[in-house]
Amino acid sequence: MAYDLIVIGSGPGGYVCAIKAAQLGMKVAVIEKRSTYGGTCLNVGCIPSKALLHASEMFHHAAHGLDALGVEVASPTLNLKKMMAHKDATVKANVDGVSFLFKKNKIDGFQGLGKVLGQGKVSVSKDDGDEQILEAKNIVIAAGSDVAGIPGVDLEFDEKVIVSSTGALELEKVPASMIVVGGGVIGLELGSVWARLGAKVTVVEFLDTILGGMDGEVAKQLQRMLTKQGLDFKLGAKVTGVEKSDNGAKVTFEPVKGGEVTTLEADVVLVATGRKPCSENMGLAKAGVVLDSRGRIEIDHHFQTSVTGVYAIGDVVRGPMLAHKAEDEGVAVAEIIAGQAGHVNYDVIPGVVYTQPEVASVGKTEEELKAAGVAYKVGKFPFTANGRARAMLQTDGFVKILADKETDRVLGGHIVGFGAGEMIHEIAVLMEFGGSSEDLGRTCHAHPTMSEAVKEAALATFAKPIHM
Ligand code: NAI
Image 1 (cartoon, helix red, strand yellow):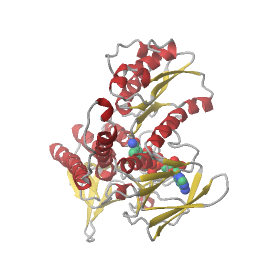
Image 2 (tube, rainbow, N blue to C red):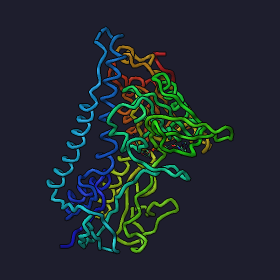
Image 3 (cartoon, rainbow, N blue to C red):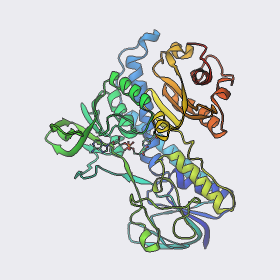
Image 4 (cartoon, helix red, strand yellow):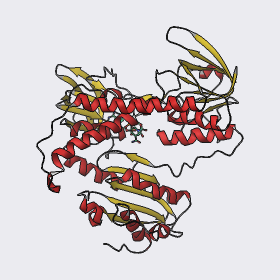
């Protein structure tokens, strides 16, 4: 039987695309090489890491955050097995949820490695060599990304001592010490998990800042807070070697500007230096699907590759490697295939780092506006001046709004603070509608909420904040 659409990959990009296409009346099949649906995000990424981030934060809070509120508890003990069971149950509930949605939408699932044979033809091969050919009017490649390793460094992940994000979600005991290579999103999130549970964590980062690409002021503030939590940072340090040693593993690094080589040893080394698109082993070159110099599938404005009827979305194409960006592309490409006007607004894609406090960002950073020569104004408001934050002892951080100097249109929003990942969305909606800082500042916000700091930052952008 020929399908209207075959989707290769069932991560947030692929499964959302499949469901949307089925809702639009298409007969859809999904090919997935894992034994469960959901891709990296649900199985070994966003979802399990958030389960551990929440649980480890509760542990840390019970030990360090309750006393000041008048809640005196005996020093909490860690049951890591139970914490891991909670993580596994969270993953299971989510991947089962995708299976349920596939059944509900009459989507056929095929387990195996999907290969594009050309326009309208895909093969599914199983580990035992069994191969099946499927036909479809349209193909969407949503194959995601994989751990990249460190360019130029010979590295072997045993996922016990030298671990990627996958192994860092599975450690059987809390390491006494951990070195994190890469001060990006994964390094800081998973480094936080193990630091909260008792590991001495050292982050070694190439750039002079953590969270390169994020607003500089926000990144600096987060670094200060993570340092307070016990994380140690070696910035401007290029890692040139990671290898196993008698007591764990050792990491060799040198100042980027040149200088003395340092070697540090730890029980566990987490390498989090980025991800690469999964564009190999899918027969793409043979099928005529063109890749760019970074191994990403090239697409046009309609997500179509160099082969008619073959589309690609998510981590395997250009743009930020974020689940929600892939999801929105999944919806858009399904709509385009159905003859509708699918579209993604790449100027308004929020990014959240789930540390404590969280960092959330949407639109342009101050550095980007400066580099582009845009005349802008800034409004800022600290959580120390927010009543709800004081009541909860969550006063670390601030909200920063960037707006066009002439038109007042909001160009970016950046929050570091408790619950930042939830608060960012009102700025995203505002930007989607082309709103101004005055629109935001004149919108009534419930009192007392952390979100009032967003309103006050907007007031600070076009006029003056009231509470400062
Ligand atoms: P990343 O690109 O965010 O950070 C990697 C860091 O490693 C960079 O700061 C880079 O300068 C550093 N680095 C590279 N080579 C180095 C070397 N030789 N020595 C020292 N430092 C070096 O990549 P990460 O954290 O691995 O995440 C991968 C992808 O997954 C990202 O695109 C990220 O956005 C996404 N992700 C998003 C999450 C979220 O939205 N909350 C959570 C986890 C991952």
